[in-house]
Length: 231
Image (tube, rainbow, N blue to C red; front, side, top):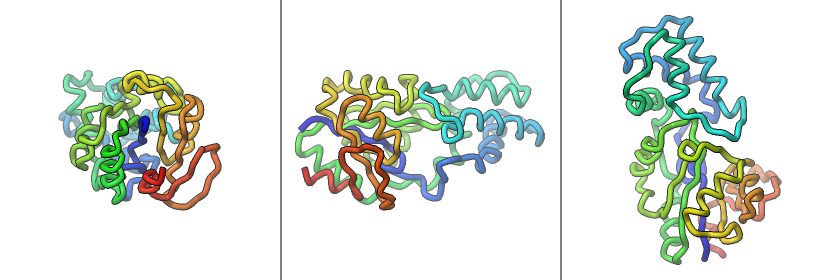
């Protein structure tokens, strides 16, 4: 049956009401981070930190290399005239708490994954993370949705240092799974999901829940994950 590899956000799960670009939420995220750090930054310092985040915003500035949250955090500390944070993971929990609210699993995710698993396929996730979000937070969210047991492998861009559509992302995952490109089907909802699949030589399935019908060169378009069970 081969392997099915999935994108995560807006494919298997979503944060309801959260836009693709998080710019409007920067000030609150920075305030929560400052509280964690025991700081009270002034408006100019918040504004400076917002500009730092905009520079790392991949919706505004696409890139194929990943930057860890620790690097971004050091830049924010500079804006706050603060010393480096000794507990970056806990700082990340404070910062990302604004964005991780109202998480839900799409209704078709669990049933589809369960059926694919029953058929003997390998299941994996490769997902780009925002602002170098640590793997621990991604796993926290996946445990909350109950999806972790379905997967043989979960990999994020923060772990390997590259983002889609760099083919090295799927090459890393394929090596871990012991699969050749032709044995992998990659499922995602964005253009870069199609591009990375085609660049690596695997089957590209575009999940088009909103029926926008884009043509990005995908091998197949589906409206629901359930349609994966048709083949």
